[in-house]
Structure formats: C-alpha cells, structure tokens
Amino acid sequence: DQFGIQESLKRLGITSENLGVSTGSKWIKSEESLIASFSPVDGKEIAKVQLANIESFEQVMVQAQKAFLEWRKVPAPQRGEVVREIGNALRDAKEDLGKLVSFEMGKSYQEGLGEVQEMIDICDFAVGLSRQLYGLTMHSERPGHRMYEQWHAIGIVGIISAFNFPVAVWSWNAALAWVCGDVCVWKPSEKAPLSGIACQVIAAKVFEKHGFPEGISSLVIGDYKIGELMSNDARIPLVSATGSTRMGKLVSEAVGRRLGRSLLELGGNNAIIITENADMDMAIRGALFGAVGTAGQRCTSTRRLIIHESVYEEVKSRLASAYSKLVIGNPLDEKNHVGPVIDQNSVAMYLAAIEKVQAEGGKVVVEGGVLNGEGYESGCYVKPAIYEAENHFEIVQHETFAPILYLIKYKTLEEAVELQNGVPQGLSSAIMTTNMREAEAFLSVAGSDCGIANVNIGTSGAEIGGAFGGEKETGGGRESGSDAWKAYMRRQTNTINYSSTLPLAQGIKFDI
Ligand code: UN1
Image 1: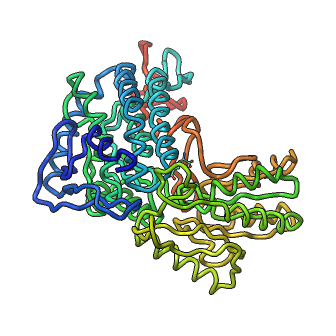
Image 2: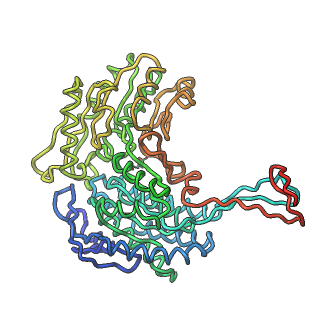
Image 3: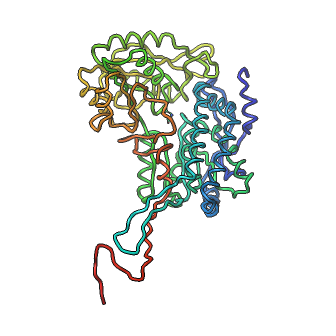
C-alpha cells in the first residue's frame, strides 16, 4: 500500500463491508446483496457495499419528509452555518477524500484534490448565499397595495450523480439545496459508491452534532432501479441528474409525466476553435489538458479541435509530439499524467469508437490502444488518441467518454462556429484567439450555442462561481454558482392590500 490508501479509507469510515443506505448517522440494512467497488487503478476490489431496495428507499423517503418539516423552519443563515462546518470538515478530509476519489475512479490525485476543493468552494459560496436568497419587490397597479416575491424551500431534492465527479457534483446540489431549506436524497454512481459513503459520513456528523433530525442528508446507493424510483416519486419535487443523455431522457420523461422539475447535466461534445490568431502555446496546452485530463472522462472534456487551415499542420504536429511525452499509469503517482478509464465497459466503448472513426474515413494522427503489462493489470489503461475526422461523422456527433480527440479543419470563422454548434450537445466551448473581433463574434448571440463559452481557456475546468450546464441534449440545467439556487426553491408572489377597499386588477369593475 505504497500510497497509504488503507489508512485513508479507515479515517474516512470505509470498512470491508459497508451499508449503502443512510438517513444521516443511521445506516439501514436491507435484504439486497452486496456489490463490490473495484479500483480501475489495479483492478482489485476495494470494499463491498450493500445496495438499496424498495423498502430501504421508502424508509429514507419517509424520514426525509419528516426532516424537511423541521429543516425548512431553521433560518437560512443558520442553515448556512451548518454548511460552513461541512465545508470545514471537507477541508480536514481533503487529502483522504481526494485520494479515495482518485483510487476509486482513476483520476489523478491532483485532480482528486481539485474535486474536493470544488466541494469546499461551493460550501463557502452557499454560506454567503444563505444571506442572499433575494426576491424582488414590484409596484402594484392598485392603490394601497404592496407586491413582492419570496422564495421558499421546495422539499426533497433527489440527486443522481455520475462516476466521473463522484463527490463534487453532489456538493454543488446539496450545499445549495441545504441553505435553501431543502433536504437531499443522493444516489451516487454505483461505480464509485465508497466516495459517496465517505461524504455521507462527513456531512452526517455535522448535522448530528447540532441535534438536527435524521433525513436532511440521505444516501441511497443502487443502480438505475433506484433512479427510476426517484424519478417517479411525487414526493421528490426536484430531481437533479448528471450523466448520459440516454439516462437524462429517461429521468426527464418520468419526472415530466408527474409534472415535477428536473435539472439535467448531460453529455457534452466540446470543441476548441483554434484560429490563425491563436497564441499557439496556450492553444496546445489548453487542448492537451482538455482532451487527456481525467482520461477524457469529464463532461467538459475536449472532444473536437476545429483548426484554421493555416495553422492546422502546426497544431497537428505539436499535439502529436506532446502526446508522445504523456506518461500513463497509476494516478496516485504524481509523475503520471493519465490514469485509467473507469472500467472494461468503458475500454470497449473507446475501442469501438476508434474502429468506427476509421471505418467512417478518419485518419490516425496518434494511435490508440489498450496498455498491458506491469502496472496495467486492471486492463483499464488506454492511450490517448487523435484522429483527423469530419464533423458529420456519426462517431464525431456522439460523446465517447474516453481520451479520443478529433481534428477538423476550417476556412472561415462562420464555418468554424457552424461546426462547433453542429452537434446535438451544447455544454462547453472555447476559442483560442488574440483577435478581439473573433473572440466577440464567438461570444455573440450568433456565436457558440453552449452553456459555457471560453476565450483562451480550454473547455474543462469551470469555476464553481458560474452557472454550470448546457443546452440542447446537455439538458438545459444550471448548477453551482450565479443564481442556480433558484432551481432549488419555489417562488411565491404575494400581494397585500392595506387599503379599505377592494379594487380589482386590470381595472375590472364588478359592482353588485
Ligand atoms: C463533469 O464532468 O461532470 O468544468 C463536471 C469542469 C469541472 C466539472 C466537470 N469543474 O471540468
């Protein structure tokens, strides 16, 4: 145990067999079997987790409903104080949790720490927000009337999160939901359940210490069946789901049938436009991290480079040379740049995409492949690959959650923007240019159609202070910063008549 994983697990409260259902400090046993969490780092089992079933899910829901009735009455700034303490507990656990995230899902230790930092940051953000849940006041058209709006808690927020950011995405939702007065029921990815358990332990301790009831922070580890229960349950007014577009459509349909709200963060197919006016060192650096960071498994990962024909050959050869220097291996070892993908299934999708792009006429620039031999026993280590492709290729239109980058050539900026927008997804986008006209055109209404549009920054690595999310098949949801909190509350418009007559709105006369 060269990297001290066992010690970290112990400190985080992970044992060889864990229960995966909790209302806070209480853990619920059920008849459901255990699943194992395997590390893609070495392919070995880390620990087992017992899954939720209908009965344990029901217990969680009943307790969450009760807890909401108490929690919603706690003044928002006091709720913020609790979230502040959760943020501090995350500061204390940063190294252990960052290491667990790295070991369980395969991102580098540095990125694991970065993910925990996002959690700490959103807690800080939420603390400030707890004193700023502002509504507007309006001028009534009637004399002696006052009109304003206020924001109330909505109830239970269901959170479905993905393996690639196994802890941060929960915190973006939970920290905001809690200061808004909501309670959370979280289904983490069954591919990274231990990271979820560790977070639940951390948050529950804080709630318990203050004597708050069980049910403000609940955990239900399970597969898609638990996700279905959440989506169909009218006791959950808001389901916030992060994952594939396929999953998001299912959630949205089920939640929509009962006219609930869903907040969706789905696939991306993110491109960087590199113009003839780009600072080439920055462009290469941005493209490299965007494409190979987290082994291409961020929803903001760079999948396409749209390159001006005059700099196309230069970008291609500089990238090929940068890729040749990448060191692939154990993500806990800081000399490695790229870790494994999450599992064998993911490797199969990577290989299928490589086959498909070539079958459609794509040309190899940097060859892919699965690594084997010492250090690669898990079979989850793949080589970041680059292909020259055309935007209309079916595989290029599709999000493959792996380190595969497609190069596409353009002549005019209009054409580049059209290519950038010419995919079903709309999460993140970027332009590399030092030319003001190009940058502003890209950011204009006729420019990028994505939820995130950057200038001289790659597509990944968004800060928590902005609203995070995207358009089209990305699902339209916004999480994290700006006014994303409004999704977690219900708006109420209040009109008060302090006169002694009852004039009607719109000048209507109704005299009897
Ligand atoms: C995700 O991949 O689901 O912008 C979220 C980024 C991170 C979040 C990614 N802050 O890359």
